[in-house]
Amino acid sequence: MSRLDAVIGRLKAQRSCLNAAVDHIGNSQGHILELGLGNGRTYDHLRNLFPNRNIYVFDKEVASHPDCRPPEDRLFLGAMADTLVAAAAKLGPNAALIHADIGYGDAEATERNVAAIGPLLPGLLRQGGFVYCDQSLERISEFKTIAVPSDVCAGRYYGYQKV
Image (cartoon, rainbow, N blue to C red; front, top):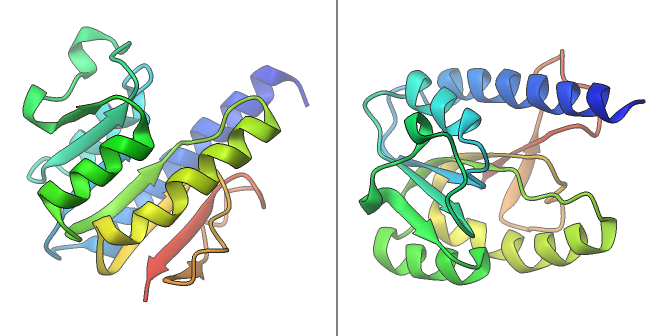
């Protein structure tokens, strides 16, 4: 698979999972967390899907298109492991949805990132809340695996619910 095909597959999987999240979280309470602002495309999609929810965004730095930036009061900048701890103290376990795009091109760096960030996610998520992630979080005991949409290739994206 070419790198172009891989990124297209990842973006299509993100869109399908986030669109499915609309039905999952419905009118339940809670905000949304976006881990990895990047260019801001996924954040922009989330704010279109969930116009009445607070969306908090985490990244090392802002590199997004100017039209795809969250308000300053909903932006956590710095090492994600640190900012997630700060967010847990500020926001508590109140997220209805976490979208985590936390993989890198390097397998070892990705594994270190998942090991550092994954265990912090349950402390930010409400009971029954959902996580969609580009990496497996199967080791987190507070999560049960949920099916991703049928158009998402196996192993491309993962879905979880806090039990």
